[in-house]
Image (tube, rainbow, N blue to C red; front, side, top):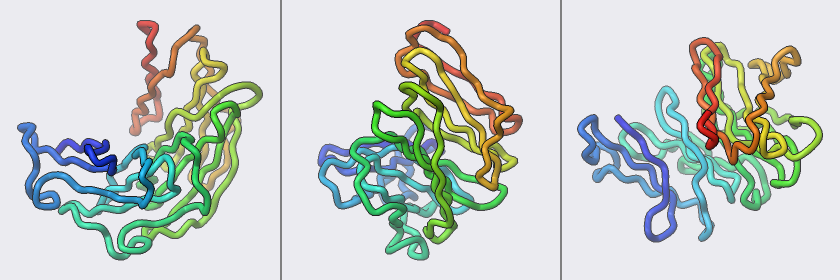
Length: 214
């Protein structure tokens, strides 16, 4: 199946499920489309991740995640009626990214600071939506906003950003939340204009796609 995250014409975040042939998967919430209303009229859905038994969606405004079962229903054991709150303030359009530590069955939400600063916060959340820990991280001095985050199959977390608008950078944390200071990628792609990242989860290698044909 293919899953797509976006917004409908009413501005509500939606998860769309497609069959391998590209048609709507009618076994998913009856019509292939699941509305996820976080209660904010300006919601912008940020990312989702397939867990062992459902999906998680992060809103870029409300600090909430929703767990949706494979049939499109909310997981009633997660948070309140399938939606959990991981922080008590609005994120003011900061970038957020969700990933899943398969080895330890934990949800990791990474939020960026304001766009003119560097770093952010990593939240570790258990399968019922309770925050177990949080820690701050920094890409270093200078402008380095968060782009995305992902986990490998060993439980390591990779956090990606864009340093001074021209140097893609990534940090690595183990499953205990400790930073691996021996690992730090900083590649000089001059004027990349928001690079995108892909993590090969099986071996931890990363691929960076830039807008400068690299």
